Image (cartoon, rainbow, N blue to C red; front, side, top):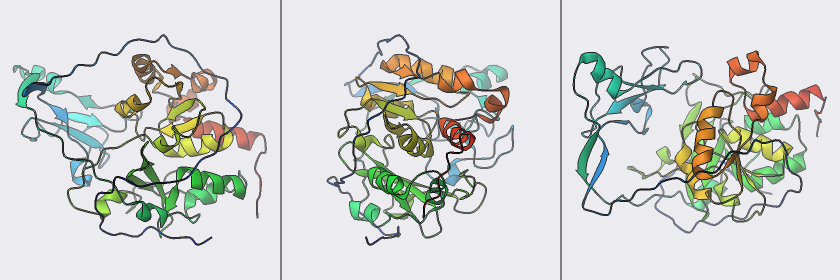
Length: 346
């Protein structure tokens, strides 16, 4: 089979990208904790004027929108609050993305209360139509499909070439020339929203951070003013599979779990706070598998959407596991290592 590499090019909107990838798995993973279903209120406002919060966390566009955290001093980890004019309130008003290891979060309410000033929560703004979502042409994604990235090198230590090839085809795992993996976000209509590019250590399977180009977005290399609307990683699989859906935080966890626990259609939010991406599967049989440190927050949202939530990691975690923020990918690798499950495949 001919393999292609991801290349930078300019693309235009393409709403009819089509992919063919998936087969059913047979087994299921039994451990989960069921939460009571609760109705979620949805408010709509079709009038010309609408209410919204005056202050919001600045949306990510480039590294320039993420700053050094005033508490832990980690660069490019701090999202500041902006007002309705998209201006910063103060350099220290915002939230650190390192929630488990830092947890710094100074809200506008707290900031103005400390200064003894009045806090205005809601403003009225004129509702404007949202610009149309952009999509990456399917051929860009297809040209990236390969096995030459560090994550695949790591997975080959534990799984057969046949299983990995099936997973690459199923999730459309791509790569770049420098060994980074590309997690393509493909929606339920097979449209490619974007691709998240990450660099991994091929020996440990852990992410490589704080080096140039260790993380990037595919859409940033295309057209200017790209209108991105993210979706669940693996969302394109839900219409082809009748199995229950599992949602984890990281794309790597979804890949590993699909190989080791094939009783679910594994998807990922790509971030601890991306709960809005889950709404598209509301009404389906869904179980959330939160990382350690996120169980309570994910349980709250599970109740809003009528999902189940697994207590797997909470049940088995040691104090050391909780300190390091274990996720289901770590659990799977630990299990494989402890059972000498490693399979050398030529």
